[in-house]
Length: 310
Ligand code: NCD
Image (cartoon, rainbow, N blue to C red):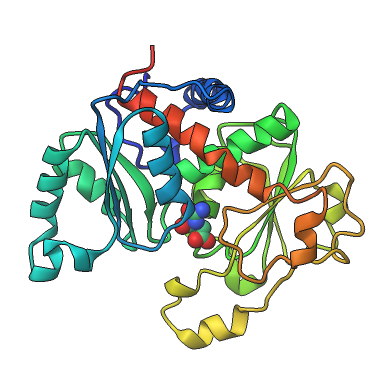
């Protein structure tokens, strides 16, 4: 299925072929930016960025991607700055955004928010993160980064570590990995931060070769990729629950002493204190490279969804 006119709500809506097409367009975009070619694919297009939750990378890389393609981004970054604060209902606000732009990117703390917007809007809608549910464009970046680093995702041994329970980047990444054939995916977390039942059921049904472990030390020597997330403080209904887990893990040079030389550490960012700052300077750290790929990847996605890529 082509991308033109499609909503991007869940990574599960995309096949391996879709992702491969996206990655090859991202390669083109990266090269064009590097060569300082002025692309005009989105000239005359307006993209609405509705970010109702904090964001650095997702919002600014979508904005940068839009501008790099010659388009214009309308940024709507807080409820307080709009008529929502006067009591306007969400549906009316969405209708306005839809009529003032050609595509909406939405981030919200509510699960299902992007789907809700897509049901009202006529133009395509991209999910920039909905609560603990999904963050499909981050996964596109994550998979693209693995491809760029290793040439292929098939055959990799991948560890995911962190807040597996509440990080939407983890749920989407695991769903996205079902489109490939990794050798093994270790889910590393203390028992209270294990993935939610619905995520486990989906990836098991789709045949992802997972194993849940509680200690990184036992398996660090097997990993090609270690994907880390922060503890998602804002999603804890009970502050005491957060207090109990906030220092549950930390990646230090010592923890990495048994790692393979090829290991790459990915992180969707922001990182808080789960990765020791000394790790930033080790060859394992690939998270800044990963964040940089967010712009060409999102350029590719916008061009494909808006139907201007031929
Ligand atoms: C992530 C998010 O918003 O889910 N950030 C991002 O988009 N790169 C990760 C996080 O907040 O931990």
